[in-house]
Amino acid sequence: VPYGLASRGNAGPHGLSEILYAFTSATGNNGSAFAGISANTPWYNTTLGLTMLFISHDLSVVRHVSDDVAVLYLGRLVEHRPVAELFNAPAHPYTKALLVAAPRMDIVRRPSGDVLTGDLPSPLERLAGCPVRSRCTAAFDRCASDTPIAVKVGGGLAACHLISPDAVRLTEG
Image (tube, rainbow, N blue to C red):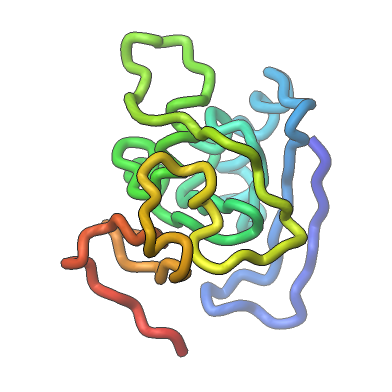
């Protein structure tokens, strides 16, 4: 697993001065990479006092090494939640589709839901509205015109027009 250590000049709001950046390639995931990451994550945190920013397409690894998960689509945040909440009750249709599509050994417990359809839009073109709308089976008219605002869901956030209007809207600034 390629990794790098970046040092910040001043401690951040959590008193942390260093962040370990780790990532796996979309095609190079393997068991030894998972073993190394999962075995060393607690050590990085408790012994070195490092925070790890782990970037991966492999949700099975993310689930085991993360406390919080941020799901991005074309560079836009669609959901950010504590790991148990995200994997047990995803709020965004894209997150649900990712979990349905992820390979699992226990097919009996595979989450139900829709898979993504359609073509991936160009990441170079910033479209109005929800970035997932062209591939989302739940998209409706508003998704094409209005960019969803991230709202509080459980212990995190999700940006989708389908989320309950009872959710507390966060203000920017």
